[in-house]
Image (cartoon, one colour):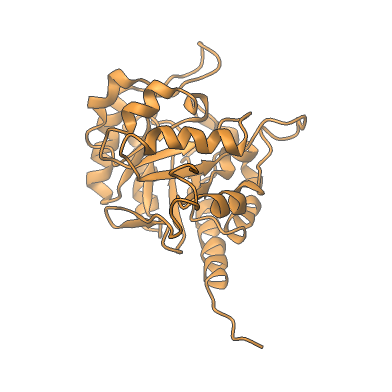
Length: 272
C-alpha cells in the first residue's frame, strides 16, 4: 500500500477552498504578506495594499521560531489579534505559523495553519493538526528529501485532515550566494507523486529580494498551484527577513507577470 497522500491512492487532485480562495484547481493562488507582524500600521498598510491586488490569501507571522534566541520572535497573541483585524478589514482569508500545540486555541480565527520548515518533523504537532478541521500548509525542511516531506504530510492526513498544502521553500546546499537553493525539481515531482496541491515560496527559497520575481516565474511555469510571497512596507527596517521581502510596488509587478504566466500555462493549444 502506498502513502495516502500519493497518486497511487488517489488519482484526482485535491482541491482546497478557504473563503473565496481555491488551491489546487489549476488556477494560481497567491499568498502574500509580511514575514512577521511587527505593529498595526505595518500590517494594515501591507494588507490594505494587497487587498487592492489579486492576492487570494494574507500571510502574517505572529510566532517566529528563530535560530538566534536574540532575534525578534514575533508578537504572539497580540500579532494574531492584529491579523484578525486585518482579515476583517480586507476580507482576505489568513495563514499563520503555529509552533506549539499549546497555542492552538489562539488560532481560532486563522484560516490556514502553517507548519514551518523547522517543525516539518515535529510529529506530535503534525498529528494534532491532523485532528483539526482547518487546512494545513506544510513547508519542506531545508535538509529533507521529497520522501521525508511526503511522510510528514502522511502524519497529518492519516489523522483525518486531508486539506494539506505542500510548500517547497528551498533547501540548504553548498551555495552561499543565496540563503537557500530553491529546488524547482520539487514542484513537478511533488505534483507527479502526490494529489495534494503544491506551492512555492521564493522568498525563503532564495533569501534575496531581487530574485523573488524570476524564481516566481519559474515556479509558475513548473506547474505550482500557488506562490507564497513576503511583502513589507519598508523592507530596510523590517524586524525579520527584510532582505528577502519585496515592496508593494514590486509585488504589483510580480503579480502582473505571474498572472500572465498563469494564462499561458492554462491555455489549451490546438493539436497540430
